[in-house]
Length: 425
RNA sequence: GGAGAGGUGGCUGAGUGGCCGAAAGCGCCGCCUUGCUAAGGCGGUUUGGGGGUAACACUCCAACGAGGGUUCGAAUCCCUCCCUCUCCGCCA
Picture 1 (tube, rainbow, N blue to C red):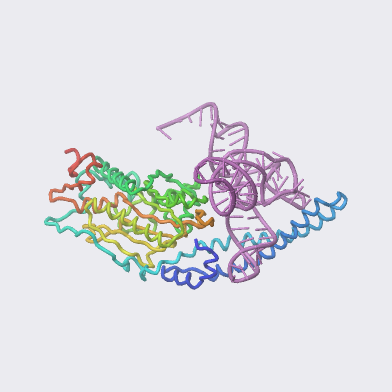
Picture 2 (cartoon, protein in one colour):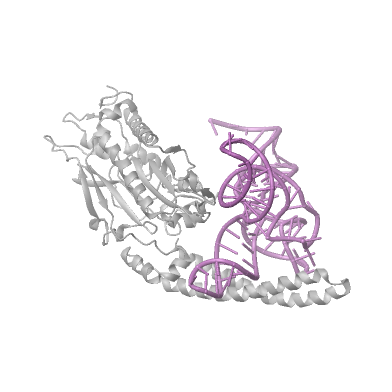
């Protein structure tokens, strides 16, 4: 959420921001509501001040004069009541309108409409040339007896998966490896709740707008998280942290749930787009310092890159264009890992910085050394998401005989296995 | 699920209808004192918003878990919700 004062002072900038993000928003409505609200506030405050004065004086009056004075205040109060109702309505409208405004993308965010316009920053590793016809991950894992999507669909519907044997170990191993990788980088591991309140979804800027993507438990008014970012970024919501305890570096691991509404027919095969997956997610909370935020952004990007390097996977990094940015994101780097079956790089990581966009919604603040209270800056990035990461992992490391050689760094996490072979062998 | 207790500033904790945005202590900040250290003295120290200012100053409004209500007046009384704790039950 933007500061209403910021919108007031930089309306044109906000409009430009929306255009760059290809969003349609009504900035003028926010300005208008804000003006109305302030005008009303002056009246209200004056009336309230008057009421307070009168009420206070009544206490000092002799008993026989109180009733008359009280009558006077009563009529004033009736007038106040009308204004108060008006204020409440206006407040709600202003907040609702404010919630729809986007953060201002950084100047270094490229112009563009969709992910096709993202700008490649670098490539690391070289996609492998196969001297045999490579299989896709679904074939590979199914033939090895490690994956069964057919039965998963029978039990739970489309876009589900089930892993068996070393496939199951592989998934847990790679998650644990990612977790250790981040602990080494100084992050505090967090096991967050998977069910959250509306406020957490709104606070991290998924709601309003993203309701269709989230599973809701109607009886309890709770939502299944689509990423650990939601509960982890919310850890200090409503708090005023001491600058001395910043930055906070957390790494959350959780299952993630996404309805993928509107994605019908897209990526229906395999493990690319499914309703439930695991993700290790890094979250940084720090003071409101643009340069510091940028440094964190680079750092969390590098954390992910180093892990991919440990896994011997070729990848590239793209600077995400305006039209592909989320409402709150100021800048985003996607990491795309080489996926032979797609003949292309596919998104496996997404590193975002938000400035104080989430913090404002979460009321996540800190007290600076100068004693002033400010909203924090927040950032997050994937460390690993599985099973999507299994796509490049098994496809890139597959052998002519249909087995998969595991990268050395991963082996200790998968019961010491050097390769995935047919189940039971 | 049943019974009970409670939620006050960064923290501990007092406050049961006006003198309370809130005692006291801790912590923190500034100044002072004392060779150093330890300690001591004085002052300051919630947040959000409006008006005002070049910026301060100043001033007003709101907030004692959240939202409603009673009252001329609510931290204090009533209702709903949220959260914490204790006991019982159930349970991975």
